[in-house]
Length: 363
Image 1 (cartoon, rainbow, N blue to C red):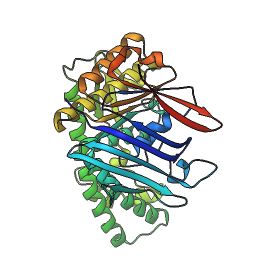
Image 2 (cartoon, rainbow, N blue to C red; image 1 turned 135 degrees about the vertical axis):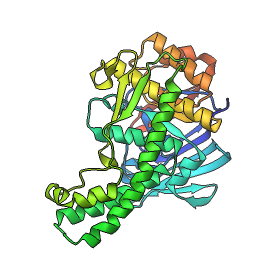
Image 3 (spheres, rainbow, N blue to C red; image 1 turned 120 degrees about the vertical axis):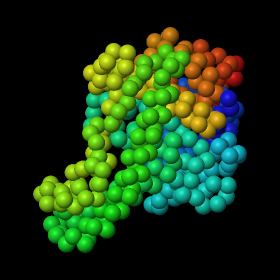
């Protein structure tokens, strides 16, 4: 199977990279170098070829290289779902991020329609034991990989809810103000709930009987939404007004996972088991997309090998290659990727005087 792939990646004034250019051939990509050299910056740049704020959730002004602060740009030749595309995203100093696809202005949502990107970063290692907000974000990114329009539904819901919360905090009692907002929220919420349920069903199915070295994470959602959210919000206005916010809805949903073989909740698992469950979900997501779309997604795996033993590392690499996925992976040493051999391209990133450089290592 031939996966989606970046064939050329160009960075300009992107964090520690004043200028960088990578020529890629669709194989997995191993990127090694010392801590702080600028490896994750490359993955972050790629993540901005999808909708949203990227794997660091940074604002456009945070990304520009210092001290110049001239703005930044990421360009890529991309082998997408429906052919080749030239993709550019950038932000000038003090301005919002912009997107262009094949020379034409585009929205971020359109990025999700031409390709699919999944990522796993060290900040997610505590996903199962921290606040539900991070798990919802993780859930929604997985959901968006199956249904790109999910992003629009989430944005519409959150905008209407912010407006409703403002009325609640201001102790506004006029029901006409609330009615219109709650109708918009209910319409978006119905899509969100349906998209999430379909994504979870797909992820659970993709793990059943899969030939993988990683544990099955049985997924579910906490609680149940009222069938008529608009009515529930209308009836709950007095309670919500006392709280100053909307207390029910898909923004309160939590993602639950169980280590299926042990019957133990992910939050009760060891650190290593929690990491293995996350990797399992990313692989399941990739397998499901490959089956649905006929092409594996692009994967961004930051420091993914650091806490895996040699056997699990080799198993991960074998699964990625079997998928035909272009996985960009980072690590502090080239030896972490030895078992990939000629199945991967290898790049070294170094930093000197605050400027990162990238060079391909050819065996």
